[in-house]
Amino acid sequence: MSNMKTITKNRQYLEYLFLLGPILCIMGLVAQYVSGTRSLIPLTLLITGIVIIILWLFIGSAARKFWGRRSTQVSTNAIVATLAVLGILALINFLAVRHAVRLDLTENQLFTLSPQSQQVVKSLQQPVKLWVFESNQNPANRELLENYRRSSSQFSFDFVDPELKPGVAQQFGVKSAGEVYVESGKKRQLVQNLQPGDSLSEAKVTNGITQIFSDRQAKIYFLQGHGERPLDSVQGGISQAISRLQDQNFTAQPLNLAQKSAIPTDAAAVVVAGAKRALFPGEVNALKNYLSGGGSLLIMVDPKTDLKLDSLLQEWGVKLDNRLAVDASGKGRLVGLGAATAVVTQYSQHPITKDFGNDISFYPLSRPIEITPVKGIEQTPLLITDNQSWAESNSEGEQLEFNADSDRQGPLTLGVALAKTNSTPSATQANQDTTSSRLVVLGNSEFMTNGLFEQQLNGDVFLNSVSWLSKQDQQVLSIRPKEAKNRRINLTPQLGQLLTWTALLIIPLIGFTTAGMMWWRRR
Image 1 (cartoon, helix red, strand yellow):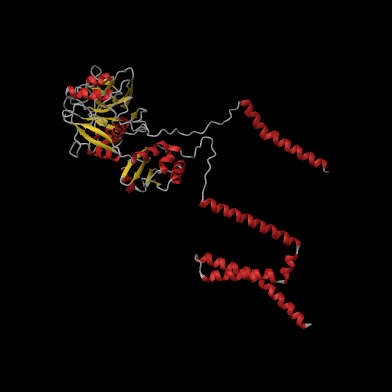
Image 2 (cartoon, rainbow, N blue to C red):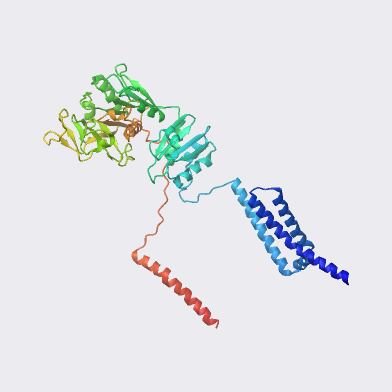
């Protein structure tokens, strides 16, 4: 009898050992969490506790009684089924991560790259990286670039805050946040200049990738032989402008029309930068023929200079005023210059200047431009001074004062962009877009010289003018922007009030009435 009591008592002690299992498991987990590493002691405690729990579940008498209950069996089946479902979901999630498939169910495929973009990215043979220099990341921009990266392992991108990483921004020559560059090897090219709230353009990104692999660099010819601004780094030279052109995949070449009777057929644009002496009639005719054949020309003429280009400019409705542009607003003091420096903060909505906002560009000793409408020519003033400016006829005087009899009150136009469609393209310009000619006339050339080029928007005026003239604004690929269709329901005020009362009063009243009727029937 005493032996039976002893055996029963020992079984009770063994069953109490079950509590040791959970305690050891908790000790092992806590020790591993505190140590932060998977050491031997926490692992031993955890395994020992699990073993004790398993032994109790299968050999203990209380366990046998526990497992013999019907409620326990039903609960066990439910737990096993739940664990099986969780295991299946975990497996599906694992396979989805390893083999991701994205479905764009929007009507216009708003979150899917166009077939042209997919083809360009999938055909990449070497790494390409897109650099977005912006302080506040736009989630839409990241999602677009993620689509590019999913299409090819050769594509990557990085968002850089110019203020936090000024060294990287300096390598790319970034002047302000929002500039986007594409890079491959040693080649870099500006893709887009984002304004606050703007989104990346798929067309510009894709065409930037296409152009950076293009073997053909657009050639910009600078007219020489008439005292033009030198292309090297001497005083008054434009070497900084030439360097930035090369960064944007342009090639700058000197052009002397006294040695060549016509503009080279591979010219993307011709620049006349601050010539001091008149052009010969044959040179003027060469420029006229070039324009009539679909060419592009940038003319920058300083005051007190007669280049004998009046016949050419007259055909486009442009006349250079011989007076000096004077700015009495005091804005010139911001850049350490006087009233003879015209400061511009007003620009037109043209591809050259549409992103300038109210930022500053300035033009020391510039001349105004007069525009007369000409049929078939689109004329757009680019640089416009404010009301406190005027065209001074007596620039030799000791003081610059407005004279209503001889001076012209502002605002003044200091730059104009012109475009004309040609009906009879010239065969000599086979490499040009012969359906249109483009001309930009600026009443100043000093703004783009070394030292002034990098200040404010001066360099952007020149670079954007060259890009527009070379027709870089015409994308290689035509990718239509994707827009969500308007699915909004336009309600009349009466219908809006009806829906409001229905949601706030009628539907709740129906619910309460139904509940009250059910309660009354069950009484």
